[in-house]
Length: 522
Ligand code: 1PR
Image 1 (cartoon, rainbow, N blue to C red):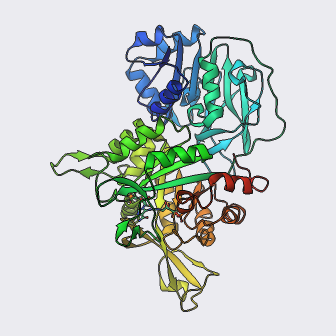
Image 2 (spheres, rainbow, N blue to C red; image 1 turned 180 degrees about the horizontal axis):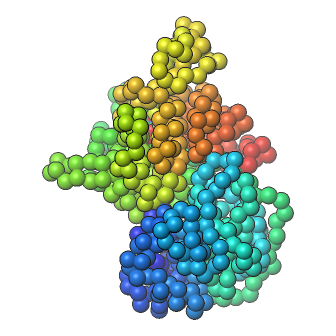
Image 3 (spheres, helix red, strand yellow; image 1 turned 180 degrees about the vertical axis):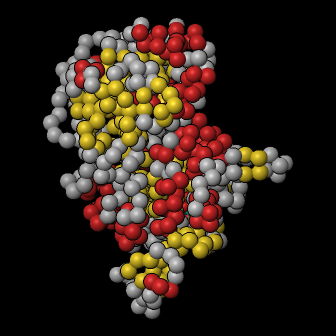
């Protein structure tokens, strides 16, 4: 029996689903004795260090946890479940860690995008049953802005490179903890969990891999979801955001079925966008909650969900915060949430005052769940102008001339699924949202959406040059070359596609095969 310490973190459901998919049984801690009497304890932590320590203190779990760790019974800490073992963290200086491992947690200060999001390798520093059956060149899923530093090298199990070499897992006796998420690292991750579940046995020969580990470029499958005219929830796909064909909503399949197909095909991440979320309310009839719960049962790569995330007052006057919506999504299996229209309204308000209120959905959710869990989805369209001084927006000079040979354009932000253009440019939006605590940009492009004419390289470079958080390029993929183009001509960390995957025109496997010797992929 596995005992799982859920302090209210984000995505505990995926850890439970992963263990149950391996035939394990999970008991979630509900009182102190559950910790003290545990045979094997798993501590998954997603979110903010300070928030985690505050809750552990409130629940009086600190001493029982220390007692359990001192008993050297099997323990697996994941992400914050690694940081908690150290003395303190730069993420929040209000609280001390458990101090089991001498050292501290600090923020990445590297010339790369932060958070460190994606699939990266590991360097084994000592042999361990935990890695039995692995050949050492597997990649695992990381999503964090802070990493652990220790003087006690004997406890370091693996390191990983991201600008620097950092501790990606530790082992001290039967206590193991990973910075990466085994429950979201596909088959390789499931193998680690299997090894943790297994009774102590013989330790297979450890495989030490030479050279630097490299963060892979991510291939993301996107499912634009809405109810069709019969009220069925379908995956649809727009052409420049128009999802109707002969008046009917295009129906390209069932969300859970397609998600499972893309997992099997090797997608690195799967994104669900409730494209009419601005119209309805996620916690009302909760169609997407059910999709998430069913998907996370069998899909062990990161899931992002977007659509309608905002503060909301329902018809009975009941007020909901965006944080409540996000919390429900995280508890249902999401690893990241994506904010679209509300990010535009938040930015407009911020630009009026220049002051952070701390109350915006971006600030609320990143404060509790960490910046790495907050994606901002941008829906821009090009507006051509004859010269930059015609507008007060951030403008680019473009090689793709306008209808009247204009050499300049700006990218107008839209809300409500491209239905309403706003007096705001995409570059400014991205910069303000990073400032407010967003951890990643999902950069769509209405002009390119569904056109199969390739990604808007100029837009992606403009945004990449303006922010230091990762950017997912989206819209326009038509063939495998378009993926190579976006990864070789921009610094985008990931490339997303929809139509060509739904219509089986270009399988994910073919994209990865083509990129194989050109770009680092998983
Ligand atoms: O504004 O917070 O309620 O969120 C709504 C979400 O739904 C936003 O993330 C917005 O991008 C998305 N959305 C709204 N309307 C549409 C539409 O298509 N009518 N889809 C829409 C966004 C863009 C991509 C698409 C790529 C790749 N879809 O996600 O999948 O363009 O397509 P391709 O590879 O076929 O070219 P809120």
